Image (cartoon, rainbow, N blue to C red; front, side, top):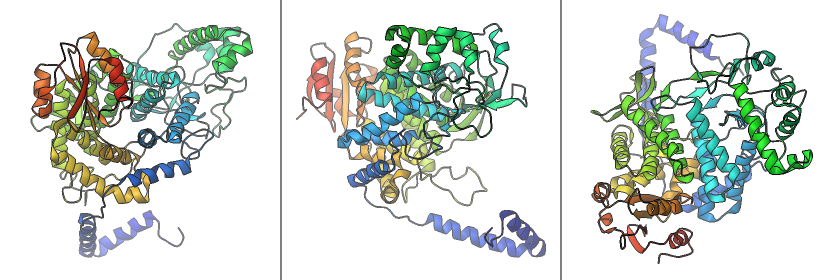
Length: 602
């Protein structure tokens, strides 16, 4: 192309040279290999990270923001949770309302659009249009894990019920359709499925909550279509719900007789409707002359009926491999949700998944992780993101459960990660271990946060959090060196590393250690913890001082905990700055004021 040889021509030319003079080709390859190895092993540029990087990063997002429907790019639109992760933290740092508004507007636009599964929960992979209406219907575990956390954190800040319900619906979907019986999470559900005549499906007997079809176990059919499992004809809805309820549901969710897909280049959505929130509940109530409460009841019943009918359709294929990295992300989501929504089932789900990984994807004698598991077989040595994402999940799980074995394991695998992936010369983490693949000429580092965050960004924040939990200087130094390594890139291309900017924000923040001294089973302790859980406090670690073995184990790493105790037998909160604790309180109101900055520590 443009006068240059194509790849096939290059390969053919090399093959011809090899036949004529293999020694010359081998020599050239060796010289090229040595040059590349030298290039990638040289000391790289670094600089001290500063708060100005966060400000310039925010302005880069401000300039690229799409104000009509949210997001930071034109169609196709990907959710990009890493962007929201940074912007929510910048809002708290700079008190910049627009930073919060960009996130909440985007999240609400997504939850209202067709990219959101309004019946079964969860989010599809991306939207083909700017309005988040027409999705590519694949559902990915890593997307839904990060998206759920976005909604949870935005809900903590705003207390907007729509945001909270979107998070809960996403997690409920994962529990129902992407969970292994023993606790791990499956990877994805396909976009395509077999299309059948709805007139035949309605007459079939119901099968409540059937499991998703595992990959390779459903007969292939030439009649598969994109989104067939999720879309509806209007007559189908009227037949299932009846004329009145069907009309109300259709108005609320934008259902049209000829279908509602404005763009359909493949002709797959003729007469089909992708559900989205076309009208609010008050608008729907006014349209049909009913009270809002009655409309909400009718819509709830309608969704249950349609979900039951949909469950009898042929499901999309499910990718049933279990990946350590993606499971780590989902453990984080369930752990955070268990705190914010005060739901013990979410905590049980997170703990069960963590135990699954420890049982099936961890080799205790070598303290090493494996990357994937399927049908009883684990394969592929763990890569950096496996260690990073799982460590994050374990830290979040500790703060939700206060079971010190999760913190101990996080420390164990972080030490192993540092041993086999950390670049002690330049900072940062290689993507693979030295002996991962002998065919690789050199080891590379992930340098961008994309639909998944990079292992470097997550690892940096892990190290900073662990430094707070352990007071270990080596963790802090490794984090500082990694931040310095990526500071030039943040300066030049801030939108390439939003998750790293979130780590930088934590590094620059005044760190809080919030310690609740009390009986873990006491209602008073529970209520004191609720004061912390309902707030989004991004620069803190949370510790429960139970007066027993858990506190003694933690005090071996953090000596200040030896002096933490209940006051007059009452559950007591200590909010500390750099391990210096003042104003212990047994009052829920006072703790709330301290956390909100209305009752300063000093």
